[in-house]
Image (cartoon, rainbow, N blue to C red; front, side, top):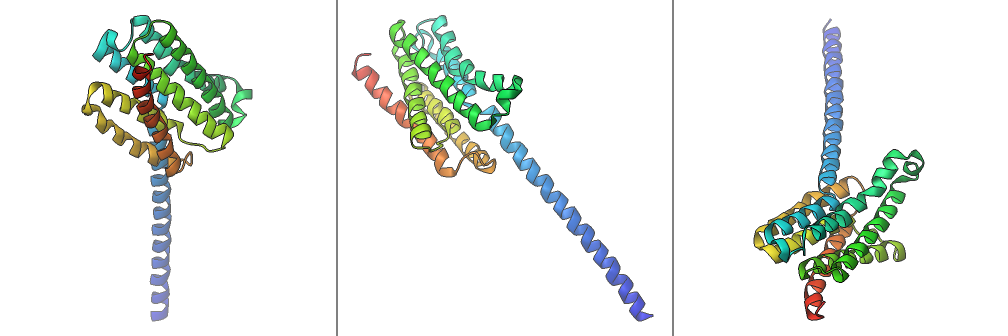
Length: 229
């Protein structure tokens, strides 16, 4: 009788342990899905075109004609830096044949469109009567885009374009409008974590991507005025 009771309690405890294990596993999966969802949201709301739009708009509001020669120059900057780079993603979303070619194809075409926009914007700024700030801005984007393209297509190294597109605007806003914008650099931490968690980039690729835009801006900030451009 005692053996039967013992077996009964052992069986009940075993069942409880199994239930606890199942609940723990489900909880772990839920937490994992939650982290992935959060990582995706972070990447979506911090995409480079969004930061480019913020950069151009904040500069235009704060500096006016000292940042862009006129409203048309500002609008052209928004088109070249924010709208043109997202065209490939929009096309892939509505054209199944393009979507099937995968993320690598999307990223390659987006990089080509982005660099094309940088060339267009730089040409308009330098040859269309742009002021120094917009010249430095477009020269920075162009230099950064070319460096990322060289790393990607020649050296087959995937430096983070996402981090590049965030670090550069933060550096520019800090240089032109003051240290109040410097804390925005902390956004690179969740961006880096989300990139690693989603398997898009390594920590080093995020750091190098950030460095590309900051170094490019520093160089253009000094060169454009020095060369009288």
